[in-house]
Length: 420
Ligand SMILES: Nc1ncnc2c1ncn2[C@@H]1O[C@H](COP(=O)(O)OP(=O)(O)OP(=O)(O)O)[C@@H](O)[C@H]1O
Ligand SMILES: [Mg+2]
Image (tube, rainbow, N blue to C red; front, side):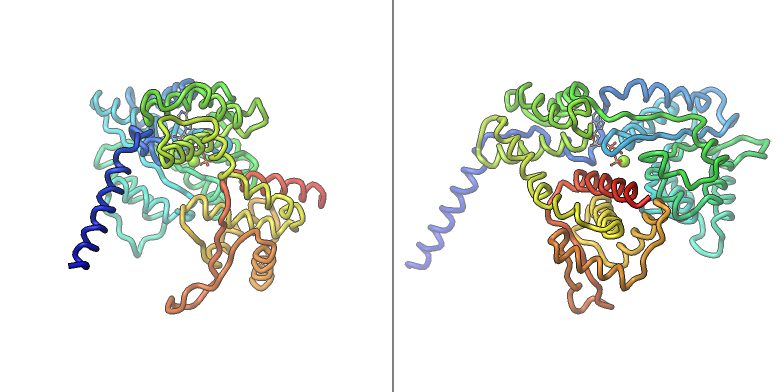
């Protein structure tokens, strides 16, 4: 008897919890549309760049095949490179199809696919073109892909995002091979490219002819100003938050904090992150609207630990910073909780390559990881028993990683100047 009353009490409590939680006012109309993966239908302040992109690919809806276009998009972190390219791809192909042209857009992430083979394989996969996985060289695969496109009478825009990774790992010859696909070709040209990279210096290892070739058509995305970030926030907030749960003050506060004209980095991803977290904090509190205090707490929790660690970072050696940059990038781009020693080593080699630094040996690298751990900059531990071949796992508990990456990049530049 007493037991069943106990159960009854528990279920009343649970009922109450559910009722209370569901009764709380909601801030989000669509939380999902504030997340980084969401691609909105409009990109305020990128209209001109979108127009330019369209003009570069005009031939695909008038006389497809006459040229193979190559366009380079350059811009800092969070300036909308990926979003711009994807939105262009989505709308342009829809428009072309409606006009009866057979055009497809493929977005390839070169951070994940760093070899010619993987890139070609990924393009084929996205277009559902059956290519044999084995037995063919990358170049043979590419030829097979091109002849499939010809048979299907399909014209493709291939966006190679984070292109500097490919350029650095696959090297000049591979880049040359891709960019010059149709140089001595008389027939219809079915493949066009958009190359996306963070800055030109990362492509500097290419020989000048290939570099010059890439620069022929290029679009540069500047960091956003406060006013631009405000417009972006206003638009994204209208999609994701209920009317009356936020006001201009809140949006301006966030925009001013990050705007490039006010010393911020002009990163749209960061302002959206702050708004999302502020909304979460407000909702958890049961507040009816997002206040400046919620925003302050969001900004603090996104960067407080970074302030603590920034003094330590200044004492690191160049190669410790390069290792830290590798870890930060891997965590940020993969979205994973932790990364393996082997992955760090691979990334570190690429980064050394980009900077023209000679990578240190494995044992030295391991020592750097130990030092960074001791300094509380990273957290490292052996992988769990039972996993084949135990390895060291590494993670970072503070953030935002965007801001950490920026800080590390600045420190690397300083170190290199000192050592030069
Ligand atoms: N003009 C804009 N209007 C609305 N949202 C934007 C705009 N620019 C960027 N965003 C949003 O900001 C976030 C970051 O943009 P995006 O991923 O395109 O940046 P990126 O330049 O590719 O950065 P990274 O170098 O880190 O890859 C995305 O969620 C994107 O939707
Ligand atoms: Mg991007």
